[in-house]
Image (cartoon, rainbow, N blue to C red; front, side):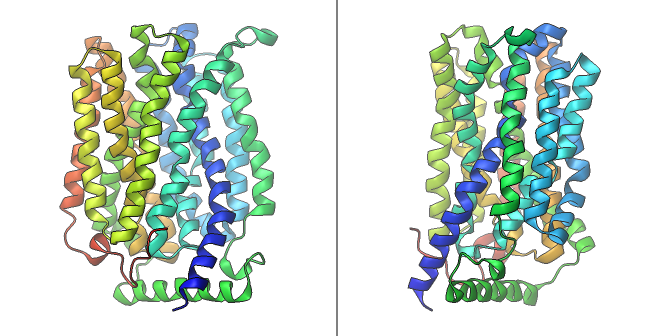
Length: 435
């Protein structure tokens, strides 16, 4: 095998796709979690209880859940370029419309519609990356793509804090400006996607002929290898026990991710930190998570091991979260949230190497979407549970322990998945050396 050709091709595809997809996901995640920064102002203006806010934050994921699988099947049918552009256009309009909610029920409605609009984006990108990157590169590539999550929180904190200072400008509240301004990039990117993305390697005029051939042949060989072990139909993938167990694993990690993301600003609010200290406290866990994520995914690709690279971070996340309520100092809380972030973010990209290791074609489109949709239901459950516990006890402690339990359960389930080849080592070819 020509390693020079391989390295040249992967480097070119990475440069072409990953920075742009990171930007798209950055905008997506920013539009999804900006509610965390606007939450205090919205709750004050409309007198929302923690339960009401938690329901509004989480109901997004009901719409997301219901339309996730159909959306990903449509992407597989019509191509990523057109379908991702459609998703970004609709979620941009809906996210901007959040600025005009009038109370509890319109808040619920717009959050549900936003979930419907965005359904299929993330699993569509995961599926799209399997069209371009061999299995041995997948953890680090998904890791680089998902760095957009912590980056959106790092950059989102100062940007969102600044936008909220526009309160009263043009007769609009600061939180209204937040939704209007942060919706604009997705509308612009929707048009860019149509002209920039390429659906498949065979259509990539920006690759040399030998690069297109090597990549297409390699991916085709991997697909045939997986299908020689077992070729799943769509219905079979959607009911497969391994797919359903992976959905529960993802549920646990996403519960921790969104629970912290939605509530961290309000958890730190009672400490009355200065604006700069508050921005730093919000950003530091995400910086630590981003750095750890990149290192951990490269390690997984270098060793070819997958299962323990998912389970160990889950337990690290559990430990960090479980200790947060036991300390009173805000900086100690931030330090423990850094530990939790290391686990949460390290687990996410390596996790996605598991379903993509044995699903292909339409089964991959449906199976990946199902895992993501069930996993993201925790984005509904997590904020709801934290809100209910906060209203009942006056403290966030019980809710944080619930998130720790979710992370722990995710780690245990991974270890119980059994000794399937795709859960142990990269199958079909040797793991590529980490760059």
